[in-house]
Image 1: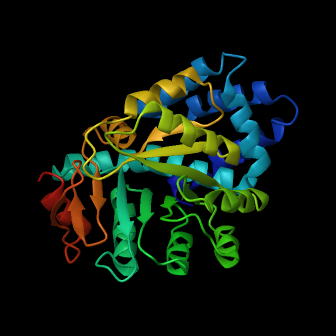
Image 2: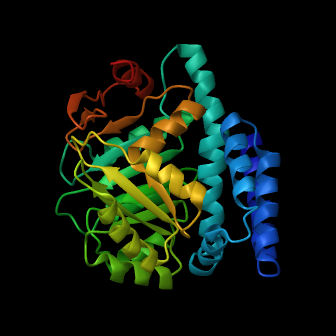
Length: 333
């Protein structure tokens, strides 16, 4: 067995044991899992994350204890273990070390994650996404965000894609809040995936209840713009909390100049809500600075063009080139 697979199995076993202990003493077990994570951590980012978590959890009234209990009650434990291991170890530890080594060898900036926007029958096809993921793993990229738009509602091809890459962690950001019964059943065999529903869609609350009943991991997300005020964010947060999800993404709409990264960061430190708020782009950049040692992120639009941080379309992504060569063209552009 490969060394990384052996270590992944060891971590998964330790997490499984830790989850069993939560029933007896939830607070103590959560702290013990954080201590365990600190022992396994081998890079600055892991050390930073687990040290902050240890400090936060000294607060006996932390809402994060409620969040952990909710996760373990509402999500299949296999999904918690698989997604957590893929995201926390395959992406943030094993993958990050691998991509930094490739950066040193080639001088090419490699993103820790690739964001892709998918619209059926557009230039960024399922086949092209599959090739990016396939080659991305060889570079150390094990986390992917897929934002779906357009009128397609079935999306079975996306679920087949997500199920194929079992060592990766996926966030599937839905363009609408409706999932069919067949899609929900298919998500059960994708423990490496968190599906995210839009707060603005009235169907999302019903779908969230169905996913929770089936113990499938899900998140919520909302777009924000320059004119978005705190009241709007708070109202969205009320909807999010009603779903009992543990994760809420705030996504800057194209052309938005403001960032809610600091607000999200402060909300995590204050630990008032049993939910982690993330700024989609801002936090991705912050993670990149530590994991990949640069602040560049990569997003490919459904039309096959690079989407710049401003939201404007840039140059076409070179799908015909090997991924490393395509990154050389676009990451330094």
